[in-house]
Length: 243
Image (tube, rainbow, N blue to C red; front, side):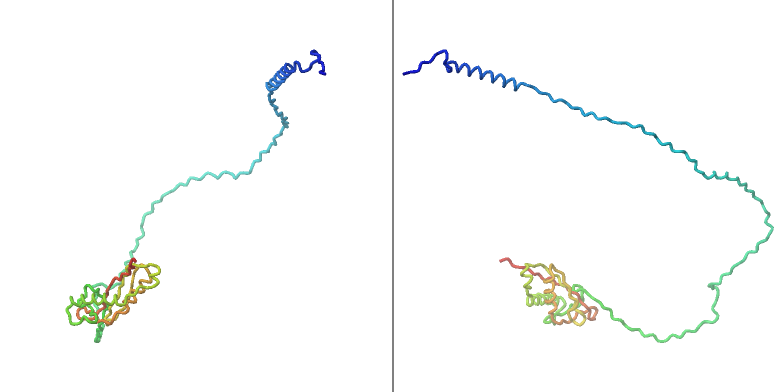
């Protein structure tokens, strides 16, 4: 059995119309709320400045006792009086006490001259190897002329260096190499002395000096027939070969 409804009393009959009207009303009020404008009100801070009357203190003027001004300078009148010179002045003559050339020595002093011994002093002459008259003779170069002795000296020097040359192990480890210039003197007795060296490293210099120190005793060089010191310089190369 179906229930009977009165079409006038039916609530859901115009529900869509009511919903649309309510929705429009809500949208209107929302739009009006968004359109409301507010303004910030500037609030001025008012400060009250109290001005009090200030009284200036009057400073009394004190008169300081100033020193009196200096008196005016008195005018000095100069008077010149002319006096006649009636006093005679005697001049004093000072004679020189030095002896002149015209003074003769009457009593000459006798001087006894004894025999004077003249002592010859040998000069310490040092002559470079390149200009010496007679070069030092290396052992094994005897009995030749001066030019041949020079060539023999140089060959013997090279052979001596090659024979005693030894590369220092410390220099090998460090990879040190270079040229060492050695200067030395062959004295008047034929011995080696005054060895000096200059090179890239102290180890190589020490080794070069050791080689020169092993040179044999030589016949000394002569200048004007007398044995003299002869200076000589030789380069020694320390070079590592690349493997």
